[in-house]
Image (cartoon, rainbow, N blue to C red; front, side):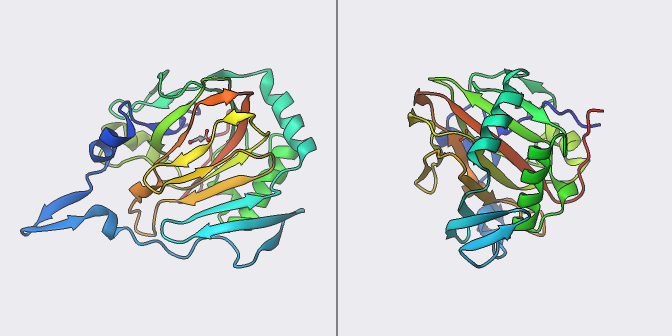
Length: 262
Ligand SMILES: O=C(O)CCC(=O)C(=O)O
């Protein structure tokens, strides 16, 4: 069974240094520089081509869609009542978040990720089940391809520095994470509460900043059908300045992923 402690895939360096360290932007091939990023080919985003969509049991709005890199802002993915209940369920079992050890494949506590968090098994309760079904209905990614839902809590100063969510196959530590379900293909960050100040989800290479708003969600894709990866999805959770931040993160895989704890 895969470790369920494996959080996002994080570099210890700052964003400017980390891009070339994790994913060389170009390689020499037959005397030509070939951009690795140019080899990634975004397919049309896995979302319906309409502004409002019935997703399982709920009407969800699609606020904006950016094509290649594929990013979208969703609204109404979860209700205020569901969010409050999910937060209550998570609050009793929070632990300091960890990051993946790129060399060894384990996880460790790092100052680049200072949230606390917890996991919910697939369909562990009605809220999780509905949320997962909404996500599957929206994206078309089968329910079985989802990792267990993670709920994260940030206090003032809490942040998640720039990172990618995918596992770079060049890193020895990635092998064990890729064994079940293959690569992560997309992420959904669902905002379970407003944040008074700070705590935006930012995409530094794109100049994009999403302000947390209860019920909204940012969705982004970074793995094409040939398992090539899009480094432009580098993202971070900026430090919370005032208030608290609560999010739920759902990672979607290429194929079926089963990591039930029980
Ligand atoms: O805190 C955020 O806004 C981003 C969270 C994140 O990057 C992740 O869970 O992978």
